[in-house]
Picture (cartoon, helix red, strand yellow):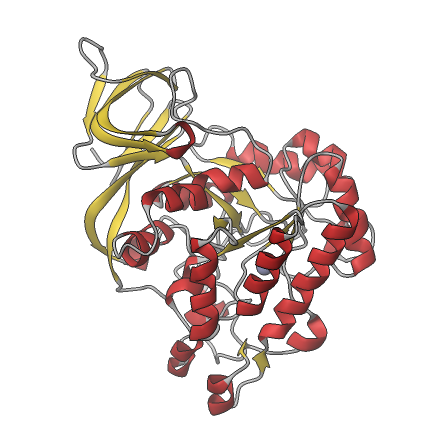
Length: 429
Ligand SMILES: [Zn+2]
C-alpha cells in the first residue's frame, strides 16, 4: 500500500527531471517545502524527508481531462473520493469530471458540491458541467455562474450538443469566459442502436454497428460552427480516421479546434469484439486497424492534442450480460500511463516530450488553465514515473470502485512511482 504523507519538506533525489515547457532535462534533486519547489539542483544540506528517485522521471503532474465520477447518483460505481484515489494511483494530479451524473451537473451549486467533496485531496477535480439544462439539449446553462465556481469547460458528454444552432450559441457564450465546449461527436441518426463499430467484424457477428461517419459528420458540424463563430470547440474521444483528417485540415486553416483520444483506441480494435467481452464495449466504439493507425498519426503530428481516459466506471451487473445489453464504457485512470508507456514510449513510437504534452501540458492549455511548470517557486505539482516497473494489471487491486477494464492481466512496463500536489504526496516508500 502506498504511504500517504504531507511532510513540510521533502527532497526527491537523483531523478531525471523533465519539463519541455522550461527546456529542463537533467538528473538531479528537487527540493520541496510547503508544497512549493524551493530549488532544482544538488540538495546539499537541505533538511527534510528524502525520497530516492534514482532511475525515475519527474514530469509536470498529469491531467486527465475526461473522467466520469458517478457522484451524485451512482455512488456504487464511483464516488468523487474513490475516483480521486484511482487518479492518484494512475499518476494523475488533476482530473476533469463530466456532467452526466444523476442529476446532471448543470448549475452553480452542483459545481460547488464537486469542489467541496474533492477539497483536501491531492488530486484537483475540475468540473465540466452541462451545456444544456438537464443535458436535455434545449436551454443553455448559466455558464458564467459555474465558471466562477470552478467550471473549466462545458459538455453534454454521453450525447452530442443537440443542434448546430445550440452549439453556436454555446460556443459564443462559453467563449466569453475563455472556456471550450467539449463535444461527444456522434450523429444519432447514423449511430442509431449500434453497439460496436460498423464494419467487417460487426457484419460477421451480426451486431448493429455505429459507422465511423456518425462521428465524422458530427466533427465536421462542430468544425464549421467553430470556424463560423471564431470560437473554440474540443472534440472528445476521437476514434475515427475521418475525424482525424477533418481536424487536421481544420487546424491547417486556422480553426480553433482541439481533440483528445483515449488509450484503448490506440491498442485495441474491433477484432477483439469477437470474444464478446462486454469490457470492450464503449462509445465511440473500438474501430478498425485503419482508424487506429490514423489516430497514431494524429498523435505524432499534433492533430490530436491530448490523451484522456474517458474513465467510465460501471457495476458488475451493468456488464455481466449480453454484449448488446451491456453498458458502454470502461475504467481507465489506473492503466492509461502504463498502456502509453509500454506501447508507445518504450517502443519509440512517441517520445517523452510527446507524452508530457499529451497528458499534462495540452490539457491545461485547452482548458485555459495556468501552466504547471517545474521551476523554482512553482507549486510542486508532479508525477514521478518509474519507466522500468514491470507489472500486471489486476483490477481487484484498483482504487476505483469499478473493475470494468479490458486490460485485465496485461503485462505492462512503466507506471506512476508517486504523485505530489500542493504539499500532499503519495509515494510507495
Ligand atoms: Zn462521450
